[in-house]
Image (cartoon, rainbow, N blue to C red; front, side):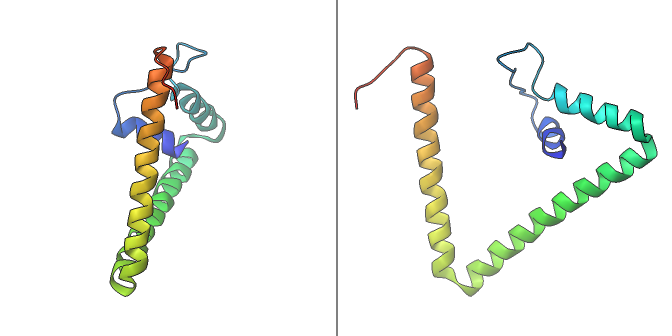
Length: 109
């Protein structure tokens, strides 16, 4: 739920659920509202703040590990970056094909 809340804050473009006219972010928001109603606002805010800070700490730790790897083992760091670029290239190709297929454009392989 934290991820959805953070993504909603960072992005104003919410994709709609195909089965429903409600945005995808509505369901987690409703669940969070139910939790807040059940346990009380103070406890909910405290727990949610803890979750957000743990997520932030984890993200910062990953960044530090990657930065340390770049200094300590440049070869492994370069391999990781290359692998990441290859995955991104494949993801872009897949998304382009999905868009083409959704529009009825099929190409022979």
